[in-house]
Each structure stands twice: as structure tokens, then as C-alpha cells.
Length: 214
Image (cartoon, rainbow, N blue to C red; front, top):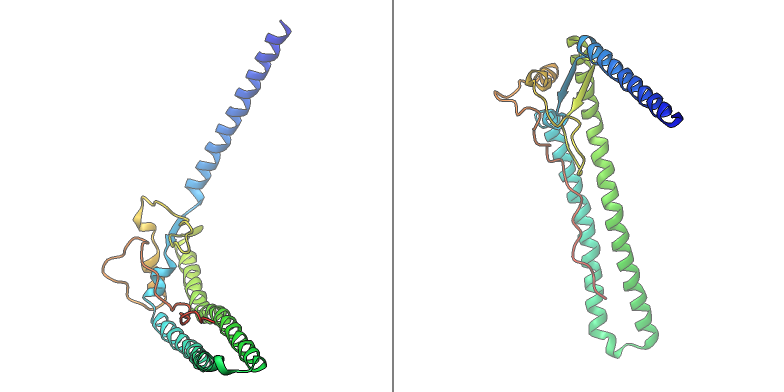
């Protein structure tokens, strides 16, 4: 009998908790519909239409060519010394041979370290060039949101395997990309891709030459 009473009390308690959650959810939904206005945009799509993006790409490509040229010079020097060593190693005294091999190994290590540093420098260069552009876009988004009474602005952009914040939007009118472009002084294209624009190509990491062989 006592067990039945306890079960009834637990059931009643569960119903009370569930009812409370329903009331809370209903109240929140009502508040959201009344006070919250949500929009979305794709920053990469906006960036692709900005004149600055072409300048960023040009500077990154130029910087990349400089790094590749330096790397190629290092590799060419290494190849020349390797070929000289291979041609004369049969007649070299052991002490000379050991000295040449040590030099070649040091050059290999130098090439490897340069490749790693070049990749890091390329990424830093990209960040330094993109930062002011992204800051300009963010300020335009902030201004559009304020002027049009938006509470939140989400992004539809995906990059590096991440998922978009907005996966579906029923109301395409909440895409503020047009408004942001106009705020930046850019005339939007005739057709807006609904937040599915393609990110601009802004350089790649330097491509190392063939791996040196001992």
C-alpha cells in the first residue's frame, strides 16, 4: 500500500515538473516571438565582393612567390653540393667525406625548418591582411543590425570542416547580406545566393620543392 502511494506521489511530481517546463517553454516562445529578431549572413560571400579581397589575394600571392623562390634557392644549392659529393666521394678521404655528409645533413635540416617557418609566416601574413577586412565587415553587420532592430545575426559560412550556425532559414528576407554590402558601398549582384556564397581564394601555403635525398 505504501509503495502504491509513493508511486502515485512520484507520478504526480513528474506531471508537475513536465507542466512547469511546458509553461516555461511557452512563455519563452511568446517572449521570443515578441522581442527577438534574428537575421543571418555569409561573411565570406560579402568579402568576395569587396575590392579589398583582390588586394589581399594579390599581396598573398606575391609573398608566397618570395617564399617559394627562397626555398627553391636553398634546394638548388643543396642539389649542387649533393651531386658534387656523389661524384667525388669514391676518392675522398674519410675525414673529408664525413665533413661533406655533415654539411649536407645540415642543409637538409635547414630546408625542412624553412618549409615549416614559411607555412607559419604565410598564415600570419594572411591573418594580418584579412583582419582589417573582417573588422570592416563586422562593423557593417553591427550597423545594419542596429538600424533594422535585429537581436542576433548568425552566420551561414562553413570553413575548415566546421558546420554553419544556420542550417535552414524559412524566411529569406532575414538574409542581411544585401544590406551589409550596401552599407559597405558595394552594389549587390542581381541574385543573392541566400547565404551560400563561396569564400574568396586568398592565397595558399607555399609549396615546398621535392624532398632532398641523401
